[in-house]
Image 1 (cartoon, one colour):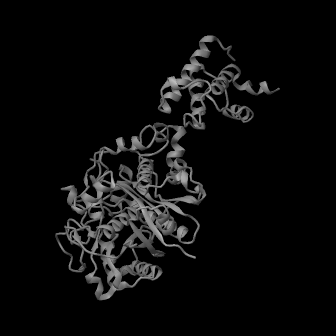
Image 2: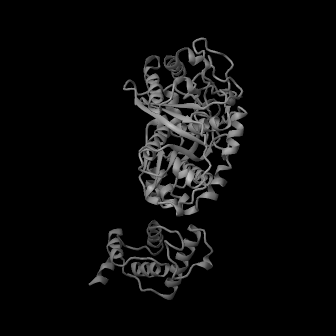
Image 3: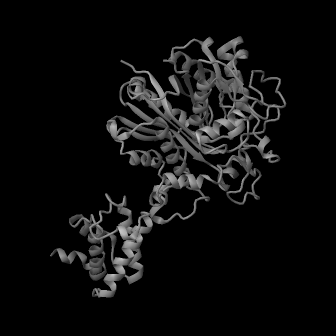
Length: 102
Length: 406
């Protein structure tokens, strides 16, 4: 369980923006927190999983996909900003993510 | 009431070109697309030749498919989607102006080509690259089509089957538009090794261009090719209502099973003859109307012998007056894509009045004595043509195409 510093927040945001710019072949300047992953970027749900893998390695996270799945069902992600917030919660709470529901 | 079925869009991606125009020009010129394999090190294989796509395919594919989607596709799936988008462009259809629930996609898919030649496969995209339904799925995703969407596998007859099913959907009023065809490549070390073990493919490596010689005395097996062929089928009334250009009409087909052997055709072409005979009956045409046959013509000992016997059995003395040619002499055998590619070549023959040749026909086999359009294309005003496809496992298909006349 990590506390989210400004450095981590910036790293996550930068990684997410760069990932979508590269994968979706769009100028990074066109992406903001309100950008819709599906409608604006033509992205897909698999990208969410790929980002989780990236952050799992980067921050050595102990998180099971089924935990994220259960959380995501109740907190669907549609925009870049929502995705960043979700990734930060995953980094912060890891396998205790569902405790936030209680 | 049954509807008439027409072809309003076509595209070819083969070893002889990356556009319809380039392909047709090279096919009419009787060129060969067979070369030494350079996609991987083939030095350990008995067969070292194949009809590979030009390397410019990668650049072409990038124009039609975004990087993200491309990373979830094999090279073969990219061939399929690229060809589909080119065929749609040729048809002039704007899918925003048609009912998406009345648009169907049917692709002949033997495999997706997720073999040792595929690079950059990750655990995340392995499933998508392997799914045999991925080709029609990507096409329907591209245009957000909501009619039936599926793949059919009947080996070398797969994409002919796809066209036949699409024909039925339109004829019976179940769809207004069907995108049908196929893409395939088995140019990889393991499958060539397998076909070598079956003694099914040519080992005449030098020179590569002369290896595929259907109906010729010195034929020694088929040459592996790769590519894609996609057609857009519509009901005639739907096509005319939007002032579409019409390439040809499809007037019937027959699909049969040999029930005989996993590899060899039924003796003396009995199953092939049954298929051709049934296709003519189903299409409601007279035998004397048939002006050209695009043969399966693999360049194997048995196929070419039995296909010749089948044509003679069906047409009797008339068989000697029907021009027959094998596109595989130029393009190699494109397996799951062959039925569609050859149906498109047949449609072009009807449209242009040019019959493509059987190249490398230099040593006539005394037992195979039909008019194989040897080595050079010719002009002929034909009205009806057949396209044969016969697959391993005994999957037979004959499509009947007609010249479109207003």
